[in-house]
Length: 366
Image 1 (cartoon, one colour):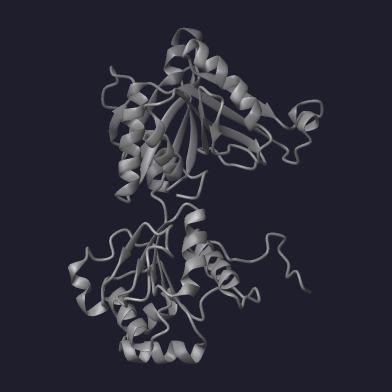
Image 2 (cartoon, helix red, strand yellow):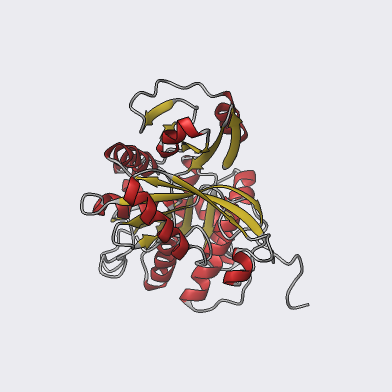
């Protein structure tokens, strides 16, 4: 996995190296004002001083590594705040542009933590959403609780805790957070402050068509931490040597697709076989299996009409709402790399319920 900052990629790396080194897990547990990363972002530090992942734009990581050394020394969790609002604080010292305050909890990773993180990773592989609970501030007698992590499922049911004495928890605040589909929430219970983080499965992109123009699309998606499946039955397409960053490559014709597990964990699909009949067949299957997140169709509007006609889909509402064709944002792309950028930018904005416009709120070329 090329991405070094997503939960999925970081946990994958950690679990492949967990037996060789000792680790500290650093998590953003709260923030005020602007910050580069949001609460829930993590990084991992090993006892060689190597770090993986980011909790800022790169300006705080060296200092976090220093704090991690203290955690390694006493095997106790440590909470640190970085206040960028103070004129003579970190912002002035490091020259950072963010004017906010973030709190980072550093936890010593034990065998119990490894078991919890392994379960979290398996849930992400299975496309399941999970929630993490961490206490980052508490009264002095309860400092040991700062190293505890609780893992919940998407109904608020406790699955596993690093505190072996922890019994089943029914937390109304967490259940409410699940109902509201919030990414993060803080809560004060008694003398303790807690962080709740939603951890979703990585985006699963299916690319139908394994031509050379699909290579940058697959590579860029992998760089973002997405899991990519390439589908093409043609012998000269979708070669594993060209699609090294694809999670899976299926060599199957749409007529034989029933042999596969029907579009499990599919969040987005791009049809780019460059064959009208193949694109139509895959579009028909996507409609039959009620894929309703993102579907991109390569080619001009006339080609889209031809594909939809061959697919014989009469559900105009579904076609209008879910099929994006011509696929991508209008960024002037012509080469495969710029077309891939255009497609992924549109896909990312739709999956995250954004409009894909300039963050400044204006059209740049006006």
